[in-house]
Length: 416
Image 1 (cartoon, rainbow, N blue to C red):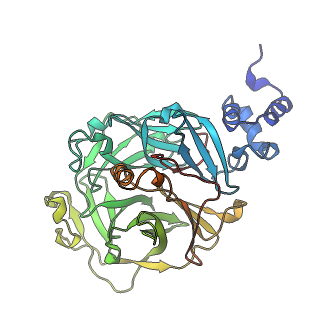
Image 2: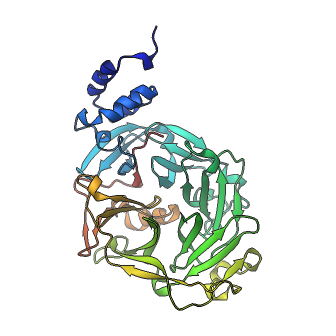
Image 3: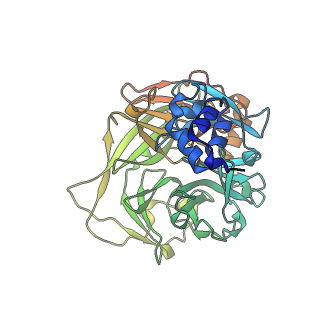
């Protein structure tokens, strides 16, 4: 009997044209490399109702909004932002009873409800990669919630490099405790390495830019982190005008430029809803001043007493950066939420709106629990929409409905 990869190309194409369900298209693509090639070359001939036809053949597919199903917890739906369609019934029991603590490309980072296991999961292919158990992080007890709340110990996880294509260089970084400590590992490690309270204030985001790891705290102070040898944290830029609880910060590498997106919460009807964004670019200034290297041994203060100015400072090279406001991102489109921030050239994606920020819910686990206790089920997944930078306007997603306690997170339909 001949192997599947020996099937004539025209017959494989005919089979492909009969596909109606997105999960069947994914399965077809994974049979063998020749079938994957057929899918990519002829995907424009697939039925329009197949959502993957707009995304899989291009190198950088546009993300869709994932929402777990309440009726069947083993399935989830995907919302397409370009045509406002929802595709239900995608089967992925691997994310049932899991809390999503990160998303990059086609991968979700999930923690089980017992707070012990943490995995990388591609819900379309159902492939999973195990990360070291949470118990291998030193002192895995959240000082905010108590010994029984390890479920909330890992707040947000970031992935640098593709875990399938480049597993040896794939670094996984997690914010833990009160968002001031970082734990990291590589694919295949047996335990996490933890850096205690490396930031003076709670962290908002982290990014790898020009081969340097940067972290942002809640006052928009930017730090460079050197993981080699003795860990050093360098204060790169300060901008304290953002020191208020009503916002989130995101770092983004846009064509070689390091950008900061500030998300402000609190409209006239609801203090938990996004009301605006501001964008800033990191720029070197002509007037030089000192910036500082903070040694690991200098961080012995209680978390509530932290302030950037109180840290031990060591004069280094006379280089200074500052955040400079940006009024437009041109034809680019940005996606933010509980994912690593992504940007796209809208001209390559019909229906994608230029100079806009597509946003989804972004709350750590304990915040979400508090929100539902105080505000009720109707809050679930509501803080989603499109922010138009040019006229400071928020546009809701047409046809998208929220559901109780369901996370909404961006997911790119990527097979690998």
